[in-house]
Image 1 (tube, rainbow, N blue to C red):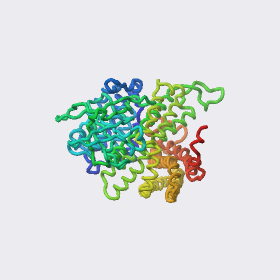
Image 2: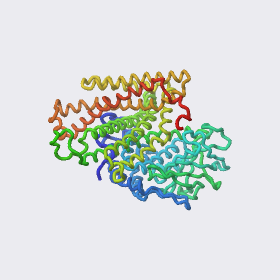
Image 3: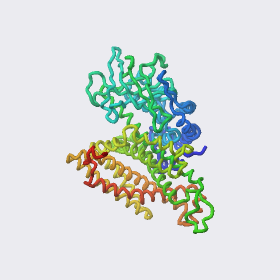
Image 4: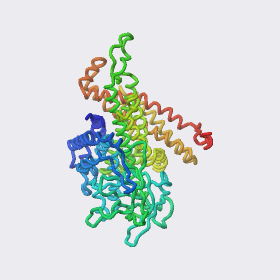
Length: 618
């Protein structure tokens, strides 16, 4: 089967040439690892994704999940069972966790590269597995020894799976409005009652037990987010020997019929309809929302990886299609002497679409891996360096989540366009990828929520400390790039966007100081987009600074037919030539659109706040 999931050479470039993750092995935390071991892990992950995950994606989409109302049960696509067994045996879920909990202690940036491969192979199956990791991590961080022994180990091993249960019909983005209730019992357990909706992997038949992380309000606690607690609610209660026992009083009452992600059940769960739903308090009473955000931050980064992964495989499938689809003569041929038809990749507008996708995919990959690399640095550093890395993580997670997923919707649409009518049909993966990716801009807090988080928490509440560190790093990259004469103009463009973004941040903070909070809310999403534009400009300038000298080492001053021949004969020359041209295209063409976006952010001509509800439709 063709490997059309993630560009292997670009992964290696970001991990080793940009981030130099092999140097993490110099730290005691990762000293047991090596670059050779990292390469082996990536190779095994790629083989599994290509051989086991990618072949089931379309079948799972067609088959979907089936709900039995008599048994309140859900069957996952049949094609999932064998790959999930292999996945479990590979011990992939806890690959970046410590050996103390059954993990292998790999860096998260390596885990991010693996996740991109797995999501590109089967978004739905791997998505369920990663929810399980999040549930296990919550128990590891906040659970007592008994909870860790009873639930955590089986979740990290994949023997059981987990979910996060936040959403209710009246509590979507406003999680503090949950009505699910918890009443303490004499034995210290809690009786849970309420209904949760939109629960990913909330019911299925892949494992013997599903462990739900449930937000609920203890009877008598205050309304609002400060009165919410977090509970472990297993589908089946656990026997003394650790095996699944009596069925708990939590049942699926239906699954959603959705635009995409057909292979991942989206369940409605009723807790305590019979008054016998047992839950166990996780962490401290009234701290549930704060605890759940520990899982939410992990999930938001993962959703960003989901968007990246879908973009990656959509782009690579588009490249493959346009190389093999023969249609029309070359537009560069002399009129009247057009000759035979050519692959459509040779047509300028198709090349433009492919280069646009390549620029965003590779830019988002670099930014996402960098964010994970910063998380790794929080583990191996202390003091000021640790604080700087954590600040960058907090600042960039909403950008990675929102920017990657918004671009994914555009990239899958562009991939469909590259394939024309065939792209709109189910014979090719493009339309499925478009349907699947749309949920990523909604998952784990809509992208509008991410923008508000960025402006109000990560900028204003942080007093611009992390933002200052980000700007400092971008400035350093600009200064290094200016040492290479051939790319100075691109460094200057990134600098201009950076300087104007700094001005806009000052403008937004001034608006907040002057009480114009509603105005800032309205500008938050456009601001996040510009910040994402600049972040990718930074990534591409960084890559250009590395790639240009390496390209010159390979091809010297060759040009024209001589350069074309050298690129045809050398994969490395072709790769670095592609990196250079992609960076030049993004910075020289795409990034320059940010000037208009910034001007719009500055403008007082902003009808958003003035139009009445009645004016939207007659």
